[in-house]
Image (cartoon, rainbow, N blue to C red; front, side, top):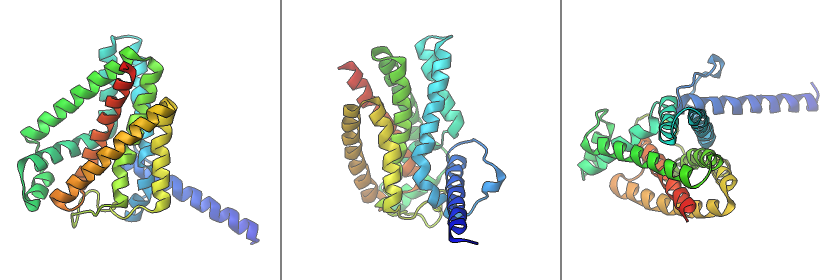
Length: 268
C-alpha cells in the first residue's frame, strides 16, 4: 500500500471516529436514536465533549422550527411554549433535571457530603420545583419579549445561539474544574478538555452568537464570562468542583442569561 493510500485510509478512519463521537454526544444529550454501529466506550463520551455545543445548535434549530410552524396557527405565546416543549421532549429535560437537583442540594444543605447526597437523590424537592417553574416561566416571557420587539428571524437566531452557547459555557468547566464524584453520570466525560477541544467548543458556541449580531456576541460573551467565573467559584467553594448536575445547572443559567441579554438588546 502506498503512502498516499495509507494516508487516505487514516483520514477516513479519523473522519469516521469524529462522526462516532458526534453521534455519541447526540445519544447522550437527546432522545434521538443513534445507529448501532456507533457502539459505546467510555472514551467516546470524553471525546464527544467537544461536540456538545453542536448538539445544542441542533436542539435550538428544532425549537426554532417548531416555533415557526406553530406561529402559523396559534398566538405567539402558544407558539413559543410549543417550541420550549419540543426541546424538553428532545432532550428528556436533561439539563432542567440538573438545575432542580442543584437548587435542592445547594439550598437544602451546607456540608459538602450532604450537598452531594441530596444532589444524587432522584426526588425533586420544593427548592428544585420552584426553580424549574420560575426558569420555564422566565424563558417563556423572555422569548415572547424578543419576538415582540424583534422579528421571527431574530427569535430563530437567538434560540439557536442560546442553546449552543449555553452548552459551550457549561462544558468549558471540564477544562479547569475537577469532577467530585467517584462515580456518576458525567464520570466518563470528566477528564480535562484539551486546548484543541476547548477551541472547538468556543467556536461552536460563539459563532451562532455572531450570527445574531457581532456586538450582541461581544455583550453576551462578556456576560457569560462573568457568570462562568461566579458559578465556577461557587461550585469550588461548596463542593470542591463539579458534578453532572452542576453542568446542567450551568447550561440552564447560561441559556437564561442569553435570553435576558437578547431581550434587553431588543428592548433598547
